[in-house]
Length: 388
Image (cartoon, rainbow, N blue to C red; front, side, top):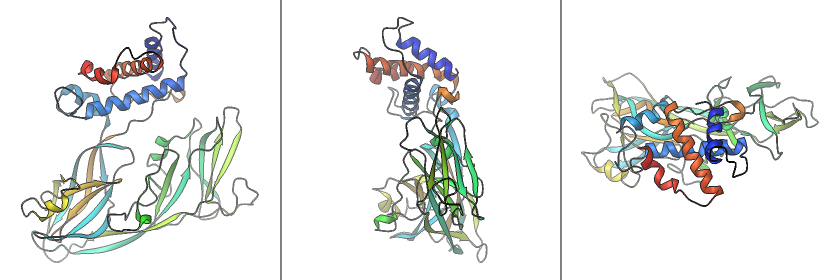
């Protein structure tokens, strides 16, 4: 079902098959309700507590087929070394390596890791130091009717280079896609490394960007400034880049990026294949709750080991716990990703399988009717039972 067909179906449902007892809905309003319904549909199918069978999304073929399009694998090659975090009574020093969650992450399914196992002997490692630079990109301005269409950054010669464009308007989904040139990476934070896990400084936290901004990241490279002519227009001297906004009449507004980039030092453990023999294993990691992690690390039978490294989830990261005898390297995160937003103006429809579209439309219609009329149908409590 295309986005246009979904809009027609919503209008038919709300107007009671063309009786037009309520005002017409704007396309943006229908987009909003359809996106809300889609998010609610995904959460209900994922949760084991949202149906009478008390089963997760893979415990029935219907639920698995509902969400199969959103199942993704993300291989995290770069990790940040948090250092020795805890001294276990059974395993000695416990180290933590931090892996960043993908930007379109929604719900976690599993974590597996490639592990260098020293077979009870210490693994030879070295510490690598990198410097990450983060530049904040604001994507909204206080001008009604304007949309972001182009992003320019300064290059090494001081000129402007186009790094992202969409004449229909760049949204947060566009900016979170990892397809930037020149080694740029998108980030939800101005600090993907140390946090309050290893530092008591408030500045060490990793605040998550809201829907009005994105951070661009460079490793071991700085962001350059424009050598422009000054005067406040595009290419203003000293700016790190500029953004082009446009409205439906073709009027343009230019916003210069003047805020300096943020520099953060990152450490990582690198295996040195020398000395004693080691094995390479690919193993499933085991989740532990934050309030239990240190007690489990002390337990000689349940503590972290090469056959099943323990992990926790904090902020925007997965933290893997290891000892001197094994080292996690590449970590693969299997997850449900956030679906792209539906939008009639750009023809962007639902990414879920087509057999779910009728259910999403029905959920949106019931939500709208409860908002504009008396709550004659309690959709929030009954819609799941109807669709199972």
